[in-house]
Length: 394
Image 1: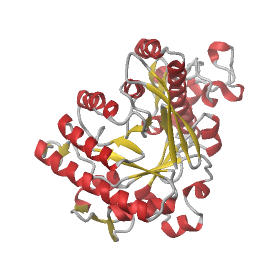
Image 2 (image 1 turned 90 degrees about the horizontal axis):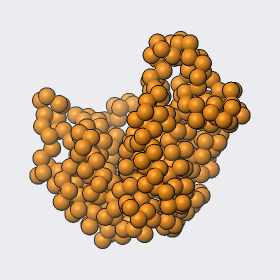
Image 3 (image 1 turned 90 degrees about the vertical axis):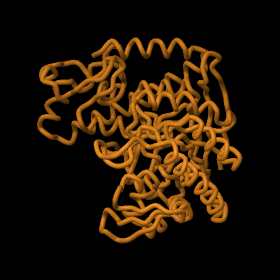
């Protein structure tokens, strides 16, 4: 089941405020979706995800197929009960992970043959197999199997940038796989929602061809894939500006694997409703913190004795403790930069747990502010203020 209600539109951009109803709950858009590759968002308790306002999270079809396996998933009735998450889940198709295997996989019209990175077993992924796996996972949003068109063919230095001809071949394969995915999804009687994925590399006319073919297939929702795959930032922004707002206005639009806070706000302005990215969690584990006033490197020596929280305006547990009151508003219960610097230097697991909570809270709170600005007709003002504050620096 999927129902999308368009609630507000911004007169000065393509930004929109919507509501997405799925089998496991309602999602307010625009939204950022935390990534839970193996059935868990790294370093975060499910209760913390609830508390910080996560409405929908991701699971990874490929990795869950490898471990724990479909027999275990089936015995739990799907991913929700297995990981104790009662809100919506989106699963990717496995296409990106298969693409990233490089020499370990062989792509044909039928699908992809590859060696398991876990135990070396010979395996086969096709559109039909991907739909069967995701049906067992019982995810609310299922993604078609596609070929993720790389920006580089081969290794940098010895390879070449993907040509228009190569991008066309890849896009057309994904288009055929989209129809096979849809046919198998319907044959299985899956009660959830299937999204088509627009491909075409960095070529706008190929993106348009892909988009038109998918719209004709009438998917419940659409994604833009094949960005943030090594291309220069200006090319990613070019595709972001070209494609999302050309998708049907009455259906949800998802930009896959993007990105920085700046990417999210710009994506909203271009008509995107849904985002996901490993950046807030991965960067947190590597000591990079996102704040209202720019990025902070907690490993820098200048934080060794700093009593301030990560972000004085933040109400997450790392910054405000259990009070939920920001430093700016008089709260003093959060953890200091000095303490988090100490945890990082000592390799204590509490450090990345707290910084992950903060980064995810920052992303989710940014999307909440975006939604509120759209409701109030103030998105342009928020967009300008966001850019100014982020440029100020911590």
